[in-house]
Amino acid sequence: MNKSPSHRDYGQLLGGLTALLEEARRSTVRAVNRVMTATYWEFGHRIVDFEQRGEERAGYGEQVLARLSKDLTGRFGRGFSRHNLQFMRQFYLAFPKEKICETLSSKSTDGIRHRLTGKFFLSELMTVFPLPWSHYVHLISRSRSPEVLNFYHTEALRGGWSVRQLDRQIASQFYERTALSKDKALMLRKGGAAKPEDDVTADEEIRDPLVLEFLNLKDEYSESDLEEALILHLETFLMELGGDFAFIGRQQRLRLDNEWYRVDLVFFHRRLRCLVIIDLKVGKFTHADAGQMHLYLNYAREHWVRPGENPPVGLILCAEKGDDVAHYALENLPSKVLAREYRLTLPNEKELARELSRTRALLERRAGREK
Image (cartoon, rainbow, N blue to C red):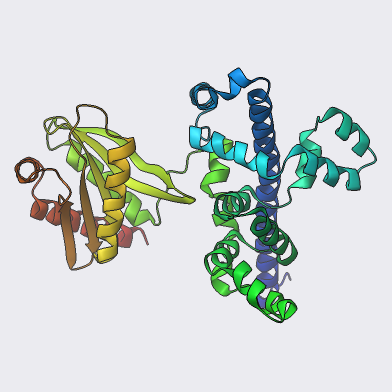
């Protein structure tokens, strides 16, 4: 007679398989990051090399980057904005060919060849940059001097810092605090210790926008199935209000410094001739939500609005149970007349809040039936 496995045995099996999958996913991301970092260094290398082949080329470097951005984006999709290409150039300048030659010379008997030719294979470059690309983004953009960059690069390698720990250490001025400390060794041991909030899960690593961007994969996901369903329903609801709303995008991504943000919905209102930025919050409305919306509006005004269009307007929808709120961000419009026109033309805030409440209740009932 076959005996069913004990709960303990099964738990060990499940735990082992879970750990194996987690490690496999982390290994996959590490491999992608090594290729990505090596590739972006070589991008920077070739851009700088092109610029330095004569004074006439150095004079129109920005035009070259703009043209490269357009052509590469047309062929390969996201990840090749002018800002990104400029950063790849900065990355190479921070880790120039001479430094790479020294590193490879210490690792390989072919070091002399590298010094003579200056040519590298991606497989060789992958051994030079052991940190993920997201780490180098923080290191390059937030280090005020080569000394600061080298310090954080060394400590991140030595301590196995996650990108969150690196971000925290830079923000807390770990370099300056260590430099001022009388017992620097003790400071490095204690100050470099990880905290629980520094941990990054395998799922978060795989969904890193930089990794998805490099692989040209979509990342149209939300924090929960409920939020995703609400966004989809609201998209349909607004489109059914009439022909004024033209759909632009869902989970529209934007980057400010080294932080990624996602705007839930973006529409263009034909009669008002303006973008409508919609952000859905499953929790209660807070002042932080208003601040974030104004950040989105300022970004959209500078980067998304086209000549002849009116300033964008923001709509914050909060779906906390018993406290559905719809609020338009109209404070930064150039005139009260325009603000009044926006408010009269756009859907009524109370109507939107009621629709949000009905939709949430419907989805919750459906979820209850499917359990």
